[in-house]
Image (tube, rainbow, N blue to C red):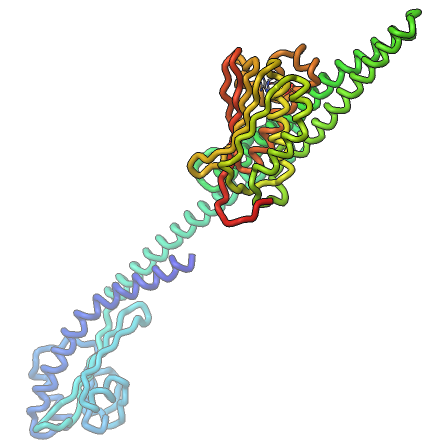
Length: 450
Ligand code: ADP
């Protein structure tokens, strides 16, 4: 708004300046002509000046004044004016100081131009000629120009104001839409989407908002899937326990059978215990970043895992081979590394064949430090490979259950690997064996082996 008002004044000022630049030179020329004629007079008096002006071509000025070097009027064609008095108008004062003067102003509907020039005789100022022209046409023109510019400014101001109001209204409506959507999401309807057209910041906010609700929806889906999977998995051992206790209570059994049934109940309870432990671990690792990471070499942890599981391996007649020479330091939560190695080695034993081999290798691949767990077991069918990291997924449910599997081990491994900036991949051939390859960025600094 202020800019428009400034423009209004600026434009009218420029137009006036342009006009008066040409006016100034025309008036000065006339003044100087008259001053030259008057300067040639022998005596500068009222009568000589009046006589000379009589003979000159009409000067077309609204007022013509001639003063002596003291500013005393010797000629003034303004009606009713008296001669012999001081006439010290600013332009006259300038001219008596030997400077041409010109000024203009808008007055009473007309443009007034005033001009004065010194009368010089034999090198000294002996008086001055002052002219004033009043131009009502020009005044009217400038007045109408100003009025037009003012009108245009006003129209522009109205347009800008209307546009600003409209924009503010639309923005506020769009904000309200976002707030309404937020309230809907707060009530739990994560499937709700806010519709924001356009390419401005609010549209970008709408897109971000929708992506956020997508994420919420996704994690809500995961959560309810997790709960339903978990309760489904817990149901099986609970149903087995119920069946076994009912059988003991209802049937007249010999002591040996009762002992067997109670043993089975204990096994199911152990399974429930293991499963709840793993569920806890899984819910702790899901979506969480690693905690206090440390720089560790992998070999000591892998050796610890091998020591823990060697007895079970021997029971299954599996040969454990460790190839840990090419070790590199990595940045990891040491407990996570232990759990990752433990689950993979345990699986390598569980899903191996009697007399088989399990090789654990540490090696370097470019920037990465690798942990490879390769068994000579039954292998995983290609169609199952993409699912084995899902919660509760088991290739052979019966066998997995028999070996105490819950289908959670690999899901835990994947979460832990990813939260430590690692990756995991699997290569497998049915009947030949499976290799899990875990890669972590190597942390190549001089650290002591832990
Ligand atoms: P589980 O507790 O059942 O072992 P996991 O999540 O550790 O659960 O493994 C998921 C499934 O992947 C297992 O049930 C098994 O069918 C398959 N699997 C995992 N490791 C191996 C392996 N080394 N060889 C063959 N199959 C495997």
